[in-house]
Amino acid sequence: MRNAIGIFFLVSLIFVSINAQDNPNYFEGNINDFYSSEASKIIIIPTNEIDKEVQDRIHEYIYKLKEKHWEKTQIIEDKKALEMDLSDYGLIVFGTIDGNLWLKKYREQFTFKLEDDKIILDREFKFINLALITSWYNPQNTENGVIIYTALRANNIININGIFHGPTDFVVGMGNAAIYAADYCKKNGKWTFKTCK
Image 1 (spheres, rainbow, N blue to C red):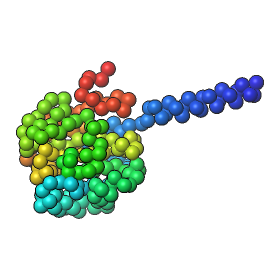
Image 2: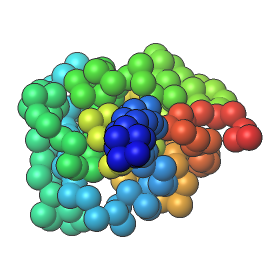
Image 3: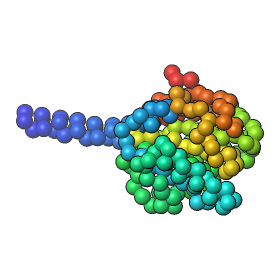
Image 4: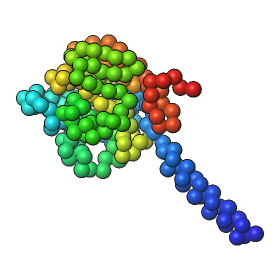
């Protein structure tokens, strides 16, 4: 009888372990939820923008934001971020998709897409001066979140924080104006634009 009970508990533990691996916990918050979370944050800045002068201006802008909003938050370059275990952190990532090597690495995992002249979400936004702020989850630890500040053109990342954002999962902006904001459908770790059922 004891052997049978022992085998039952062993099988149960194995099942729970497998089930936990198949269904990890995912960050499912919006932008405000990310910033109010208790996870330590790290800012990842780009090193691969085509225009190095614009990239320098992006760096200056981010350091000013750090002084104003994220005083205790560490800033690291994308190259270093790719070499680190960032599983304990929430990530704040700036740059174009190709200009920030961290974004470039994970771009195929994103539900949203940025192409040469458009941002593709649940609808297309076609204008080269568009910017996107979006929440996501940390691919090294899906329980922690990510906020991505990106744009079709690198110069539109400068002053991107001036676009009103927070109560939704993502916002498309131009200049300082938010032109569209909405939420993803998040279910079982999948972020889509389809209606949750």
